[in-house]
Length: 313
Image (tube, one colour):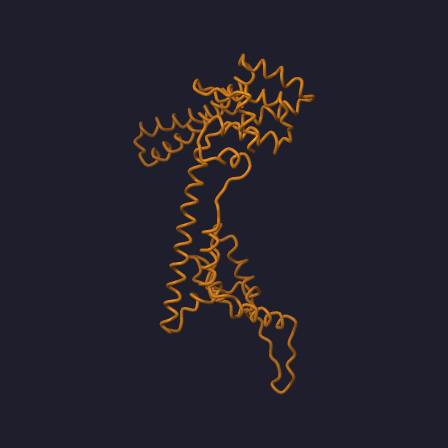
């Protein structure tokens, strides 16, 4: 980790050098980009510096002497020491950002439910006008036929266009795509097969045609798009945003406390990830380690704190 910190310092120094050159040569546009890079590099460097400082305290702080004595009676191999130290370090997090995003998710799910209900209501009102057309408002197959996938820089565009008629039960020539991206050929991605049959002969349905008929029938029984919006609204209102693992354990309570959050995260990592049994000596050592890691003058973690917090897991 010390090597990572040294690399971060070197990267930051390199950016500072580039900024000085830009100022000297008056390259204003490039300077804005470099200052953004510098801000990110400072955050990364400071994070690594804090982790290195924490590791040094875990190895050298006089308070750790009692923790080492307690854990020596519990641990029998180097892997246990590594896992315990790793959990102690990883549990040192700023959990406030996770609380913020959880609160934002709670707000957004309500807004999503409201928007879905509003759109469903508008579609029903449009249907009442009896004006034909705009089938994409009602038919899921028609909506899929008119929608292409441009995510990942169009990586799945041709795959989706090729698979769409098979999914919807369409003949190849029935597949409808939206306007192609600039510079892309508008030619169909798959050739169209034309089969001639005798009018007076008996027409045999191929397995492929039977499959298409079945799919078209199945899609004909699908709910309208407005029904899907109703499902989205109900699901969003019923959903309870949450975090899992160490983060979920740390912020389970609404009360913000560096001591409680750290102990919950620490305990979760030890038990759920590294499969430790939390014996009395280990919990006593956790209290000592928590004081060393948190390292705040107004925070004092005791064995009783550890026992009470972990009893509520």
